[in-house]
Length: 300
Image (cartoon, rainbow, N blue to C red; front, side, top):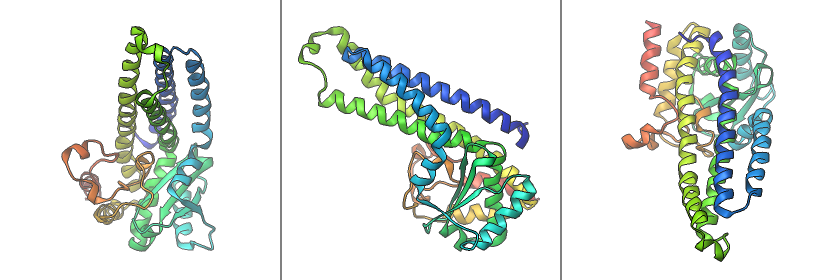
């Protein structure tokens, strides 16, 4: 059974494996696109860009995630209770104090990011602080510190950059394919036409594959972080109660984004987004009801 300790080493391996998969996916896209346009330089550009983005994802993905979410760094004097909760739980968990950020948003939510425990950050919304009791806030912070402790943050934050890159590259190719970009003579070239079709198919499917990888990563890690966070506070009902309040909030976050949705403790698009069963298949989080039920059972 996975634990806080075994998961940390596993997530490091998964991160490198994930970066390798995305690198291979981008190289494959580059080769197909280079064949479609009859220009080998496209493949070399993709290879160089993929290496650059993998490096960027490792070293700067936390800053990108915080920026996309509109998070602002706060001093202890600006949020003393939040700092007190984070400090106490970080000591209990044996972790360095992460940087603390606030997101000016009425929707209650939170996430952790960073490449390791020494370069970690926790961001919470103003709505979360206003809505939760201290016990519930401790449950949420313990959940996020568990992500830091088992190094989920590296894996999940790298995904933000890589999934976004695949989607961007695919969009560029689709636009160029439908709005021009080939020489008129290429239309008579059967090989180029074949690769163009393959390129269009790959451009459509690649973001879907990237999203499925994103979903597989985020759903599993939430259950472990819930359990680890509950063990940290010794009070599972605190996190369960917090999840109940968070999941009942109907409106989305102001800067909700599919690229960063999996980072948050709960779906940032709000309860209204959970319409059809098809939508639920593509959620970045397991159902709140299931998470709450497991936590309640732990408490009993």
